Amino acid sequence: MSWGLGDNVVPAVFVIGTAGSGKSTVAKSIASAMGAAYLDKDTVANIFTGAMLESNGESPTARDGSEFYCATIRPLEYATLLAIGSENLRLGNPVILDAPFGAYFDQADYIESLSQEHAWPANVHPFVVRVSSSENITKARLRSRGLERDVWKLNNWDEFWQNLGKVVPKWEGVQIVNFLNDEDLPVPELAKVILQAIEAELTP
Image 1 (spheres, rainbow, N blue to C red):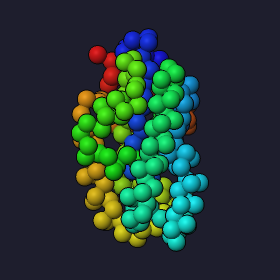
Image 2 (image 1 turned 120 degrees about the vertical axis):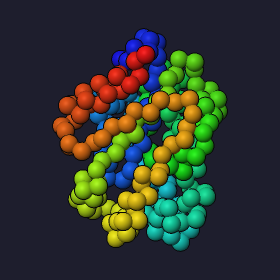
Image 3 (image 1 turned 60 degrees about the horizontal axis):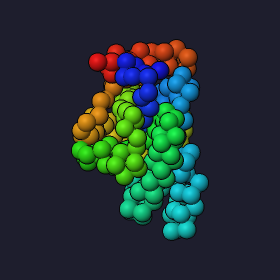
Image 4 (image 1 turned 135 degrees about the vertical axis):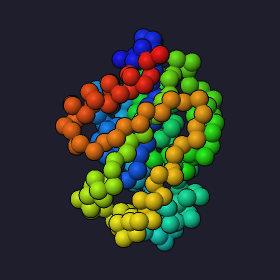
């Protein structure tokens, strides 16, 4: 599926979104519909991340509150994720990258730098699907999944929700498709809706 970009295009899809937006469900539906490599940062990195945090005397679920995680582990997580993704892109395989990427939103040349660093072929076309959901839906999803890492968010909801709208990528030279994910559609229908939105946005 080329979305009018040419039959030889290899998509590199960055699926970003806040906790509770259904980002991973969206990313998986796109990957399934495209037959693409699906790479979730948590799946790629959580085993070594938890072990490294415990070796440093911290909880294996510590994240943004941990200086060791932010300064040492997180860069390794993204480096690993992108190395695997880039290997697939160089083989001509479409790739779906499911990760927050928020720590890199302020780097305007981030995507271009990745392309150069990882030697992406000229036919690789990166774009972003930014997934969001309304406040009530987001809160309900966080409560229902019951993860330890969401406790702070729910206990400090006003602060968490107010800051969400400020977190947007400043990346240049990449198209961003915004997708409001409130309806909890079945995966096949969700994939169809998303791919239609992508095609409408990306087709010249």
